[in-house]
Length: 412
Image 1 (spheres, rainbow, N blue to C red):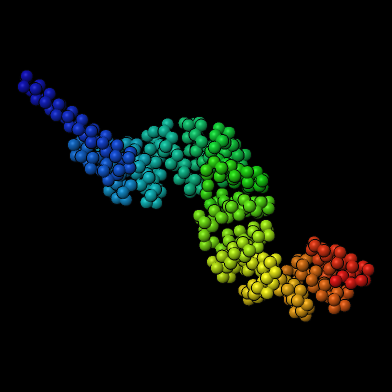
Image 2 (image 1 turned 60 degrees about the vertical axis):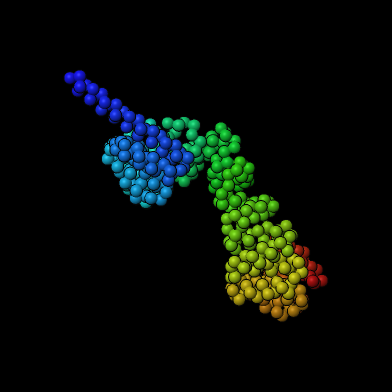
C-alpha cells in the first residue's frame, strides 16, 4: 500500500511539473503575441501544446499568430482544434468568426459570433463585432439593437455612441443621432470624429455654416478623412470662403486624388474668384492635362485668360469647346463677345445667335446681341434683347435699355 501511494505521488508530481512547464511556454508565447512577434510566439505555443495537448488557449493564440502571418488555413485548423478540446470556448468562436468574416463567409461568421454572445452575454466585444457587421449589411435595426445592448454594458462608451449615432443618421432619426454625437462632444471636447459626424448631420438638414464649424473642429482635433475635406471645401466655396476652400482642395490634390481633374478645376475657380488668374490658369491647365475633354475647365481657363487680356488665347479654348460640344452656349457666347470687342459684328452676331439658342437664359448673350442690333439700327430687336438681359439680371442692361429704347440717343 505504501508503494502504491508513493507511485501516485510521483505521477501527480510529474503531471504538475509538466503542466507548470506548459504554462511557462504559454506565458512566454503570450508575451511575444502581445509584442506582435507572431513568428516567435508560434513555437512557444506549439511546445505548450506538445506538453499539454488539451491546452485549448494555446491553440487559439497560435491560430491568431498564424492568421496575422497570412497562414490562414493553419489558423482555422487551430481554432477548430480548440473547439474540439473545449466545445464552449468563447475565444475560439470569437476569433473563428473573424476568420470567416475575412473569408467573406458571413453565414458562418454570424453563427460563431452568435455563439460568442450566448457564452458571454454580458461581454461587450462580441456585440461590437456583430453590430458593425449588421451595419455593413445595412441591417440597421439589428445593429441598433446591438449598440443599445453595448451601452447597457458600457453606458459611457464614446465609440459606441458615435456608431449608434451613425445608425440613427442612416435611419433618418436625426434628433437621436444629433443627441448621440453631441453627448460625446459634451463629455470630450477633443473627440474629432464626433464633430465630423455631427457636421454631416447638420449639412443634411442644411445648417451649412454650423456644419463648417464642426468640420473645422474635427480637423482641429486631429480627425481627418477625404470626405471631410470634400464636404468642407464645397460649403466654403458656396460661402465665398475661398482661402479655406483652397486649403482643403490642396490637401485633396496632394494627399488623396492628385490626378482628379475636377479638383484642379475647383481650385482654379477659387483662385479665379480671388482674381488670382495666373494661378487659376495653372490649375485649369492641370485639369485639362488629366481630362482632355473637360469642357468646364476649357471654359474657366478661357474666362481667366480674358480677365488677363489674353483674348486671342481664350479663343483657342472657345474653339476647342465648340469642337467638343457644338451646343455649348457659353462657348458661343464667349467667342461672340470676343468678336464684338474686335468690332467684327457679323461674326459676333452669328455666334451670339447660337449662344441664345443653346443658353436661352444668358443675360450677357442677349446684352451683346442687343448692342449689335442697336449698332445696326435694329431698334426693335435691340430693345427686345436688352429687355431679356434686364430680366436675367445682367449688369448694366437696365441702363443700356433706357438709353437705347427711351431717349433714342443710342445705347452704345
